[in-house]
Length: 440
Image (cartoon, rainbow, N blue to C red; front, top):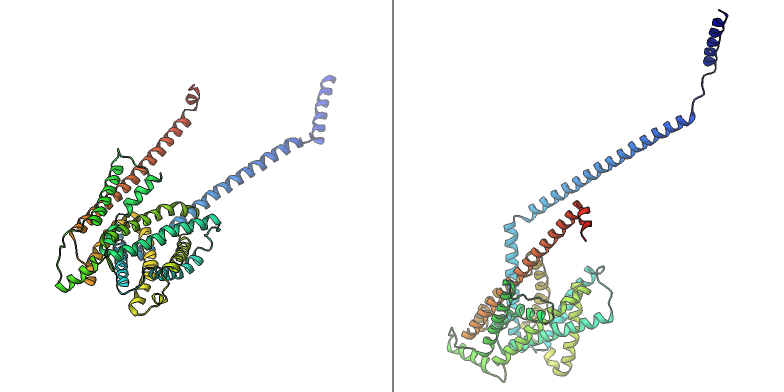
């Protein structure tokens, strides 16, 4: 009994001690729990921030897409339907070819009224430089690369080919031949450019493919047409009155004063060679100096200097430098403003909207316009050899352009197939890394 009382007392005493002296809390456990709570809160906060960021980015992207779509709809409403845009491009191309055709006629009129063959391109390049220089300076002020001595030398050589030789041969060819065949010979420029680029390794030719064969056949047709125009004149197709006929015969066959047909066609061929060489030489220079307006301005400047040097030896009569009639003023202003100002701007816009091939397709329209204008205004005659040669040149032009278009399509197709193949190979490697690594 005493023992039992003693154990109860011990038990009650232990309970009292436990109540009066509770166990001390473990602060390390609490700190760990608090750290876990903070970590979870920070993690949840980071997740919220991440999802908020995604939501905000998606919303901004949707807003940007929506604003771009609205802007595009506004532009489409302002520009009109695709058919109206195509009609604008066609009208602009016809105006462009009309301006080109007018330049042939105006230049022939300038030579007929006695404007010097050297003074005419000098005044033309002065007006062109005054017209293009300010636009080039202000519009390309930030994009213009720094000038170096090597660039200036390249500009000088580019002007020698593209301005001095090009315009000089053109004036001589127009003086001895006629505007119609000057325009017809210009249709051979794409074929000549193709030959030059192929000779320099800038153009690849694959005879086994249709595009390569078309370019070769087009080149042969263009060269054959130019040869026929040069060597064979043929009988006239239309007949003028006796007065007009005698005047035309005096213009065509007087080797002392006005025209020598073969020599004129040779000069026009030199003009086409210079023009094609100018485009081939210009391509690598544009990559180093992409400011095109500035490049044209520098080319006009050095071409003007070269013509002035030639004039110092070949045109010393001060009377030839005097503008004596309104016709001379008109022809010089047309050559400078329309041919070097409006034509460059309009051609740039047409190439931007329709592409260079689409613009080049309309080149024969210029020949037809020149032939009609020369027949009505100047009384020029149509000859069988010229018509046959011009037709061959036009056929060659379209063959070369078709070949270039097909070649571009084939290059894009090959590039897409190569890209698809690489993507499939990368996908297979990512799916089977072990199998790929086991290959010896």
